[in-house]
Length: 187
Image 1: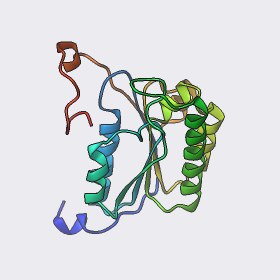
Image 2 (image 1 turned 30 degrees about the vertical axis):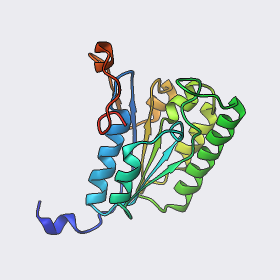
Image 3 (image 1 turned 60 degrees about the vertical axis):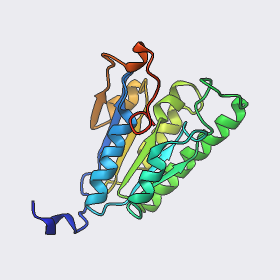
Image 4 (image 1 turned 45 degrees about the horizontal axis):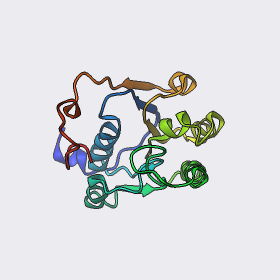
């Protein structure tokens, strides 16, 4: 591949549904890798975050470095029912519902070549959104767009509809040695 090939925007003809799930680390990181690669081809990528939102993550600033090709919209109110979550459930539900509607809107307008729905599987698994909500998003995906869904416990029906499913499996984790999350690696 020559440098000239990487400066032209490519056209997506067969938009895929990709799912990154499982108990191991790397689901969001895999989606971010797609975003970086796509930016190199001048594709427009939007990541809608369903659960993250109350903490600082390095990808927020990283996305700014890849602008205008990569954007992140934090729609969630933070992780639901874990760590330091003190918000009423209804606030999480409203935020997740708004993220669903935003995803459908973006897909219908065809403004982006790749849409990443970060932690949507967790939002579904915890009951913040319904399977019907997610299926409406999948149905809104145009052929000219790739759609990436991340998060643990992907629903079997979503797995069935996907073109690619990768399950991250934890083999070993530094937390088991008492090593806490590291900037640049974990967040």
